[in-house]
Image 1 (spheres, rainbow, N blue to C red):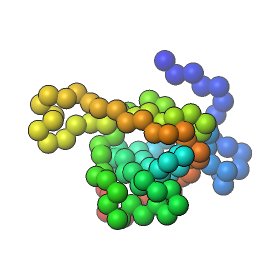
Image 2: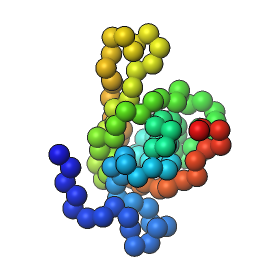
Image 3: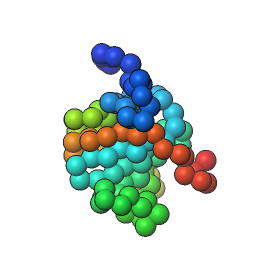
Image 4: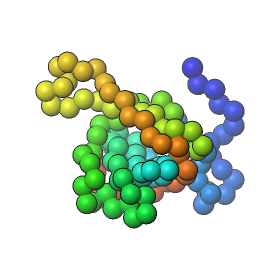
Length: 116
């Protein structure tokens, strides 16, 4: 069940959003207390950069994971999304989840080249 208390688009787009549902499309930079995530809702992928000081996803901070669903991604709360298994895990695992530390900001960013 989804409770929408207000529209997620701010009056000033430079301020970012308070939350994303996962249906918006586009690419989003989710900054948490401990990490930065790039969630591409068009490609349905998640990248994680552990050090939010300089998010350089090209350095390979972790594999790009296939996104199944955003359960919660709201400023001030912990992020929670479901990821699809890959490789041999597909036969035995339906999905796995990832929790982040508290979300500090959510910003729309350009989609990385070559991701589609």
